[in-house]
Length: 476
Image (cartoon, rainbow, N blue to C red; front, side, top):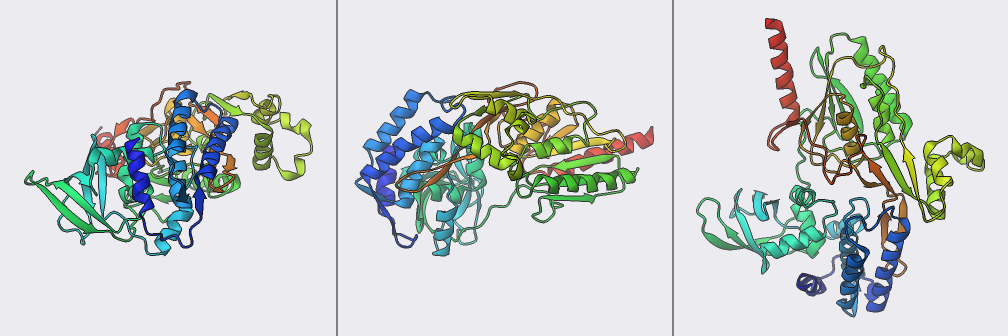
């Protein structure tokens, strides 16, 4: 717990950039942490799947013992964020959005370089013009007096994915943000660096910089930030880009699918369809099932089993999200939906299990009959990863790119929200467990059929394969 103590000392010395601060006494923070554990146990379908209840208790007891007499709300939020991350569930978490917005609005600055966490090493990926002393490949050995291993440990403690490799990818995708999560205000950094070109060790003091969003690993053909777009790349190739399943209602996506596939099927020249799910940030997996009906050739399902943690509050929340308001009074209708049927038949505090039946594809005249490619990357998250597992398990086509950013079977549906009584910090808890169609519950991501290096564009790889195949077919 030395890192924990160091962090408390560090953040306690920060000059506030969050405006007027609310200080929380130790007794209130201890009470909130006890409430946190009870809330997770209440809402989570299996809170101790990765770490035992004893391990959680030991961690939280240690944190409570080492709390100072008081902390600001943000400083305590950092502790809460780490406590939830300790459960090792990507969907059980709290969000920094409001604190980050205030910090940036007050002119807060961030670590002045993008850094890759690879093989337990911190390597410079890119640096701004304001940091000319750093070059790609330089290895950071220490930051502000902490060794690289101490920094890595602290950053990983704030990463919320289920596997260390996923945590490291998240940190690498936005190092300045994770450094702020862990250490708060950053005015300047003192670096100890091993130069890549000379292997000499040098020290630098660099000024922190305003926040810059990292460049995402997207194709140059990727359209503007819209949930759904379709375009023809050539006479024979169509491209559908889907960024999410959550910014709109189900009707929106269904209408987009219908319009796109009507256009595709009217043009008999289109033989190849590329589905670009890179950067897909998740949402409602049912929207992926709706899409699957246009490309599947045999019955399929997005999951084999879903388990739900049932409680009175959960039932109310579930009904509010999935049952039209005018019909919620009519309980006999609840048996129509497979989820509501099992949930309302299950006692509060128990787990409802739903076995998924397979859906039929649309008739041939409505489906796409050609070759389908799915593009994925490390930012293909949650419902995007569910779609990738469905696509792979039912052999709908070829996956090209990098492994997904979520497990193929995982805890999800964070519809249970809680608020800590004293700090008022809100957090979400996973209410379900989704098992991929083939039934595997291994802690693994969806692996692409064609692995593409991160410095290459997966879409370009697909186009090269298509062009090569077309030339081969013409020769025949």
